[in-house]
Length: 197
Image (cartoon, rainbow, N blue to C red; front, top):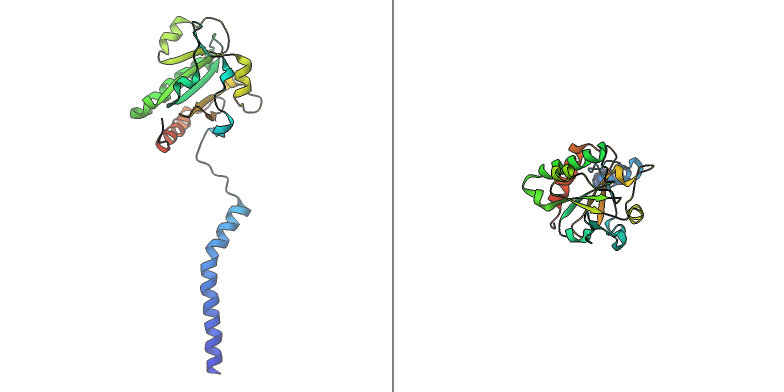
C-alpha cells in the first residue's frame, strides 16, 4: 500500500515538473497566436527595400539641367523630400526639418545626405537655395517618381519624407505632418543598427 502511494506521488511529481517546463512554451504560443501583440518600435512605415530600388527612369538632373543620379549618394543614408519649385509652406517645413534632423544626429550627421526632388521645370528661389545649402536639389520626371514612391491612402509623394538606405533602396516612409522628434528617434535607431553608410 505504501509502495503504491509512493508511485502515485512520484507520478504526480513528474507531471508537475513536466507542466512547469511546458507552461512557458504554451504561454508564448498563446500570446503570439491568440493575443497577437501589435507593438512596434518604429514611427515611420518600413518598406521592403528590395521592392523599391532607385529606378534609372527617374531622369534626375541638377537645377541647371546637368544629368545627375540618386545613385551618386549610395553609401550614405538619404533623407528625401519631393515638391514643386514653388515650395509652399509644407515644402519649406520639410526642408527645415530635414536640415535639423540631420544636425540632431551629432557625430553621425555626416552619414546622411538631404535630397529635394523638384517635380517641375520652374526656377527655385535663390534665397531658398542659400537657406538650405547642403540640400541636393535635383529635378525629376514626375511620372517616373509617382511610379516609384509609395504613398499612404489619399496622400501624394509631396506629403511624405522618405529614407533611402546606403545600398540605394527606398526603405522608410514617414507620415504626412510627421512628428520630427519621432523621426529623429527612427533615424538614430537606423544609424545605430546599420554597419554601412
